[in-house]
Structure formats: structure tokens, C-alpha cells
Image: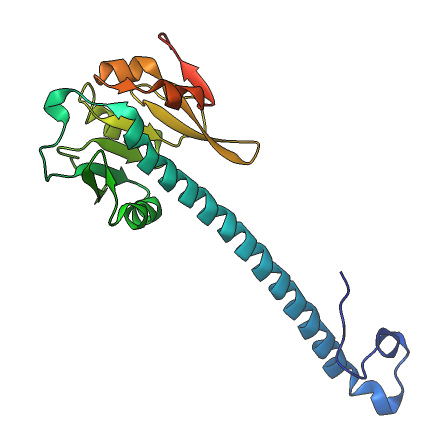
Length: 212
């Protein structure tokens, strides 16, 4: 990285022994040089922060797109299928940015002939009647509580723990080789009375079949 000093100011002028005439100017010149160095540091830090933010936004967008698509590869029990004119509901807790992107993606679109509604939940809030529950990565205890709230209900549960699929989580996002992938627990899907399409399983990073 090259640092350019203000016009007319050179490192040699800072290193040379000051004359009486220039002695009073030296602190000011040093201050100017230090200001330039700090400015360059701030600029590079800002670029790095923007790059990191872009990566976070990309990951959020990819996960939101996956969530929308997941609905098309799940068979629900007849009793859980919404009546004509009622939407498929995706509840999101602990991931407001994903919820907002998901709402943008699903706006004006339909899945299985039904609109898709996105609800943001507060921590500890009962999800009510939903078809998918996405739980953002956070405190393990809070994630487990959210999963327990829909245990054995016909709800597609999706987490993003970054570790192996959690108990009661049907789908779990993981970042593998800088790509967003997902793993599936058929045991959890069966407990929630859901049938997953073979096409979904074919593109999963990992499929867990029984046992934990």
C-alpha cells in the first residue's frame, strides 16, 4: 500500500535535522503526515467493512431465496394445507433481515396456488398456525425453545446453526467452502408429519436418515 503525502511534503523533510527556522514547523508537519496516515487507514477500513457487509447481505439473500423455494418441495398433511384464498405462512424469529428479504421475494408471487405471508416473531412469541419456522442463529437455549414450540406439528423447521442439524430441525443451513448449503433430517421431517421431495434431498449437502 502506498501512502501519498500532501503536495510539497516529503519523508526527507521530516527526517532531516530541523534548522532553527524550521523547528517551529516540524510539529505541524508531523501532525499533517499523521492525519494523512489516519485518513488512509480509515478509508481502507471502510472498504473492508463494505466488503464484509456485502458478504453478509449475499448470504442473507441466498437463505431467503432458499426458504421460499423450500415450500415447493414439501408435502403437508391435508389438515395443514390452508384453505383456498389463505396464504402459506412463514414465521421468522431472530433474523429480521432475512424476514424482510423473504417478504420482498414472495411479494406478489404464489406457491401451490397460494400467496406466501411472512411474519416476524419476537423471542419467545408463540408462532401460532404457520407452515415454516425459520430460526436465526443465536443462543442455543432460545433456538431449542423455538423448535420445541412447534414440535410434532406439521411445520417445516429451518435453522442456521453452522453446526450439525439440531434435534427437531428439519433443515439446517451451513456455509461450506464459502457457499450456503443445507442439510436435512428425515427423522425430524417424519416427526413433523412432513414428506420432502426427492429433488430437495438430491441437492442437500447432507441427508440424515434416522438416529442422531
